[in-house]
Amino acid sequence: MTRRLPPTRLRARARAARRTLLCAALVALTAQTTAVAPAFAGDPGRHGARDCVRTRHPLSGQARQILDITRKAKDELRLKAVELRVTIDGREIVTDALGETMTGVPAEPDMHFRAGSVAFAQIGTALLQLVEERKVRLDDTVERWLPRLPKADRITLRMLATNTSGLHDYVTDPDFLAELDAHPFRHWTPKELVGYSLDHPFWYEPGTSWNYSHANYVLLIKALEKITGTRIDVLLKQRITEPLGLRDTRNSFTPEIPAPVLHAFTSERGTYEESTFWNPSWTTGPGAVITTHVCDLARSAEALGGGELLSPRAYRTLLNPGTVGLGGGTATCPETVCQKQTEATHFGLGVIVLNRWVIQNPSFSGYAAIQAYLPSERLAIAVSTTKTEDTPDGNTAGVIAGRISRALAPEDPLVTG
Image (cartoon, rainbow, N blue to C red):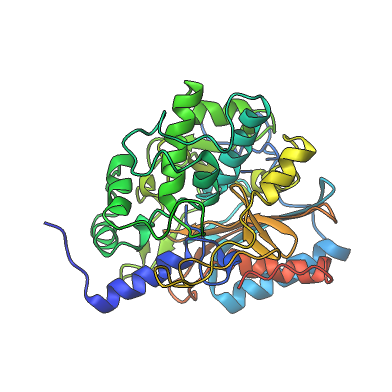
């Protein structure tokens, strides 16, 4: 029997979920559910030296400034652990880890964590590659691949990839939230997840507005698998992680996290508890549930945020696929859901554009992270954080990245909320 939460808990959980939706980037929401620099620590079965390691101390100049900012933020935000890496033009400025993964066990830069919506940046880039190869068109409707989806003859690949289909987000459904809260280890199927979205009417006619919905990427993954005849984890390995050398960015079909692990903790169910191995299958489609470490995350920020795997034309589409100008409250969709997409702050094609930064910032089940890239300065910032019992709500990794950005790029600060 499903355990029902009190209305006040459900409303609080829904608010938290919405924050986790679109990354603190889009002001009211935070996206819940890629990264590089090879780096394996010595877990059994792996050989070779660890190469995602702390920058050698003593530090000076920018490296020291960044670490001082991070230490202060860790204390103010009452964080359990912080991992960070900052690069300029691909050159390491600083890599470090502060705090503990578990009591008495220091955090290390090569510890793996869940990266959630960073997978969307991978998927968006892979879709644009297929478009460039003329294997599909962005404005193809999806009824060939998703024939049972309502309005499939009006929903396009572009709409799924840009969150403009009008589908409700299952992560805000009270029944879904109650079940997720009661059974954090439950395995979810795409059919179950999309079913919660389809229990609600579309917010608007496809393509006419914007709202964040995890269902879009669950469906896009299924469409890409049918288009290519390739499972999504294999497709992303072939097209994204392998070409970029992201050896520690993995897709999984289980809650496993490769060792060494950055452990997570959260109070979202009312009691401070470990959440490291809660089942993340609800965050997106099978095979796109990724883990990574901070060195890969910085490389991902640089490569995907800079369009390394795309032509200049496709990269422009990645940054603005037609979302600017969409959204805004209507009689059928409140502004808190259908948020206005502006030139300064908008959802791209699997990425978020925020004050000229290209970002993704997942936050769920006790983990928070951000990959952020400022193309004009070739500046990449990657941060991952975990919580103590007293850590405030919100994506704390984004808060730290914002403070670092104000020191390194004062004319283009990254403001995440």
